[in-house]
Image 1 (tube, rainbow, N blue to C red):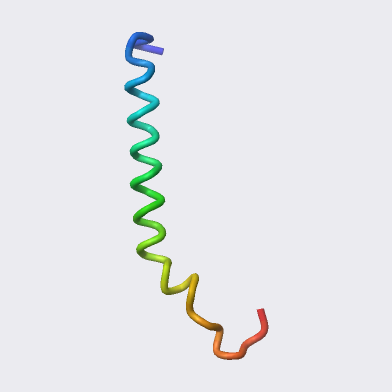
Image 2: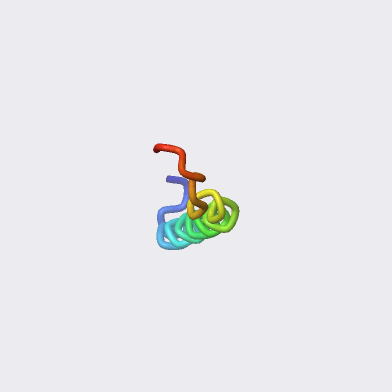
Length: 42
């Protein structure tokens, strides 16, 4: 690692990016994930 003393900062930054990405995913795909399939199997 380039800056070992910044380890916790990088972990926190990565967690923030993952949380943000998950939030965007859920906002965009919520209608797809929750709509009924109009009686189609599967």
